[in-house]
Image 1: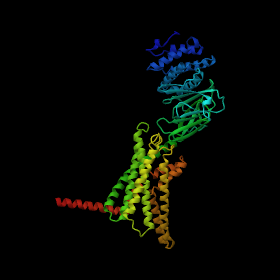
Image 2: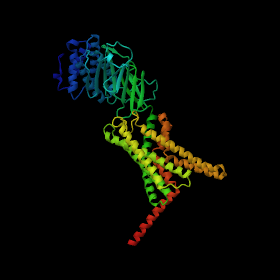
Image 3: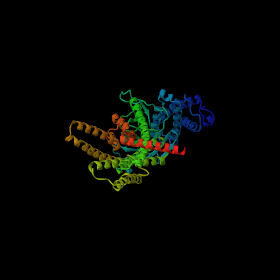
Image 4: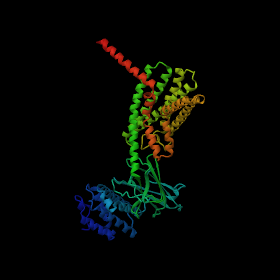
Length: 575
C-alpha cells in the first residue's frame, strides 16, 4: 500500500485511505522512505485530473504539505526546484477546490494554512543562482537572485515585474547574495478570509479586492524579514478607491492587518509600502454602507444628469439654428453662434463620457484612446467658447458705442474656439501617446504622467478670465445704484442676481468646484455639489439661454407660427 503511485490512481479519484497513509508518512518524518514521493503523486494527480480533490480531502492535503515542510526544516533538508514546482501545482488545485466550495475557508481558515505552507516552503529550497519562474492558473512564482554589491546605492532590487521592488533595510556585506521569491496568488470568491484587524471598528465591512503577493527574501541562504517592499495592486475588475487599505496576513491573529504598511491610491491603483516581508494584499471596505450608498447615488445622478443635459443641448442647438435663420442683427447672430458652438462641444463631451461606460479599457484600447481624445478636445472647445461669449459680452458693456464687425468677431472666435482646442489636444496626444496618454483604468488623460494638466491648466485659465469678466458685469450693474433711488436699487439687485444666475453656467464657472474638490476629494458635500451642477450644465444652458429668455421664446413662437401659416397656405392653394 505504501508504494501507491499515480499509475494506480490515474483514472480514479484519490481515496481517503491513500491520503491517510500519505499523511502518516508525512507526520512520521519518513522523508527518505517515501515521504517526498507523496508530493510526486499528489502533483501528478493535481495536474492531470479534471475532478480535483474532494472537499473533505482538502484539509488532509494541506496537513500533508504542512507536515512535510516542518519535517524538512527539522531534518535540515532542502527541497529541489522541481519539488517546489510540485508543491505549487498542488496548491493551485487546492485553490480551485476551495473556490468551488467557499465554506471550506470560512470554517477552517484553509487559506491561511496554505499561505503558511508556501511562505515556509521557499526558505527550504536548495540554493540556486539561476532565476526561474512557474505559472499556474491561480499561482505565479518568480525567483530573482543577485549579488548584494550589484544593487544600487539604495539597495533596491526589482522583483519580477515593474510593479514590485524590495530594498534592504540594513547594511550587509558586499559579498552576500540576495534572492527573492515573489508569489502571486489569485484567489477566487471567498477563498481567503476578509477578516481585518480594524481596531474595533466593527461597523466596517471589508473584502479582498486584489491578488495576494507573497515576498520571501534570502540573504546567503538565510531567511530575512526586515526589508522595505513597494508594491502596486489593481483592484480586480474595479478601480481602487479611497477605501483601499494595504494589509498583510497576520498568522498570530489569523487576520489581515495594516501595521507597518502605508497606502496610496492614485489613478485607480493602490501603492503599498511596507517595512517587512510576508503575504500582502489590498482590502477594500465599504467603509460603511453609507459610503457605498453615496457612491451609487453620485454615479446615478451623474448619468441621469448627463442624459438630461444631452437632451437639453439637442433642443438648445435646434432653437439656436432656428434663431440664426431668423436673426437680422449682427449682435444676435454673434450670440447665437457662441451658444451653438458651446452647446455642440458640450454635447460631444457628454456623449463621449457616457460611451466610456461601455468600453473595456484594457481590451478596447484604440476605442478608449479615441474617446479620451474626443473628450479632451470637446471639453476644451466648450471652455474656449464660453470665453468667446464672455469676451463678446464685456465688449458690449464696456465699448457701448462700438459696433463689432463680422471680421472682429470671427477671427478671434475661430482662433480661440477652434484652433486653440485642436492644437492643445493634438499636442497632448503627440507628446504622451502611446504609453503615458491615458489612464489604465479610465478613458481620460493620465494623471501620473502630467497629461491631464493639458486640460486642467486651460480650464483654470479660462474660468479665471470668465470670473474676471463676471466681476466687470457686476460692477457695471452696480454703478447706477450710486445715484438712483431705492426702487432703482431693488431693480439693480434683481438684475445682478439674474446676471450671476445666467452667466455662471454659460461661463463654465460651475466647474470651479473641482478645484477645492481636487484638494479634498473625500468631501461629500463638494462631491454632491459637483455632480448636481456639472452633469446638468446642458440643462442650465437651455434654461438660461432659451427658456427664460423672453425675446428668444417669442422668436421661436413666431417662427413656428409663420411655419404653420405657410404650411396652411400651401395646403389651401394645392386644394
